[in-house]
Image (cartoon, rainbow, N blue to C red; front, side):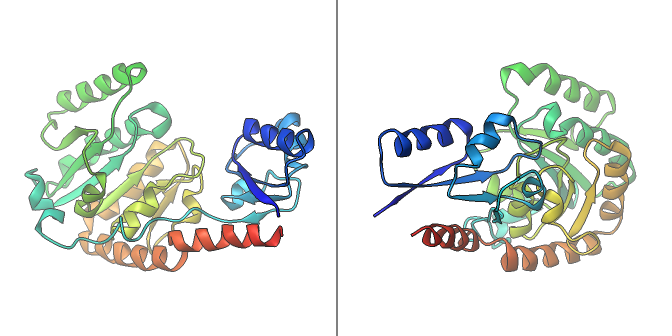
Length: 279
């Protein structure tokens, strides 16, 4: 009987090979690749010795030189779900306005937090019904970056409408309070936050970093913009702020889409099928 050794990094692949080749352990080796770049010669050497390879997206698959199966990550539809009660509403936040737009995750240049803040500074004065929230922490090396953004917001006189929440106890409820979620990352491995937002019945605008573009149907569930392109991001956000009814329609379509395609159970079944094929 073989056991499956499922690796996601070079050191894990290398250790699995050591266990199988040197210690003669009865292992089947599986590697999941999320990288969206050319692999090093050493990584390619390791990948060629795997019994099965999984790619988390079409983009990551495009860099593989061996047979693979694309299995996209899924989202827990029990943990992330549409609003169910008063605590899931904009009113529960105590913030001004009628609609909430948010950007969640670590506060740093890579995540594009500055692009979101810049867009909010430019757009919110024209849309008084909207307030923006940023949930997530800035580590010590990114504190100056976060402080600079807060200073820009204060200088624009928007400190009450572009709010840094820090690391909130439960981000799931904040997804449900949003009308629109923005994922402006400059680069990602896969990136789950758009799926979490869609599962919470929230419309999504995302860059094309990671697998974001494979999650969203432009014009139906949200919008996709080139990573790092501020003007494209701003121009994609504007119609959603201008038309909350369209935003709500796209949120409903996004919920239906994620339930069809990105349920966590689908990912588990697909990975298990790979395991079963190795017997």
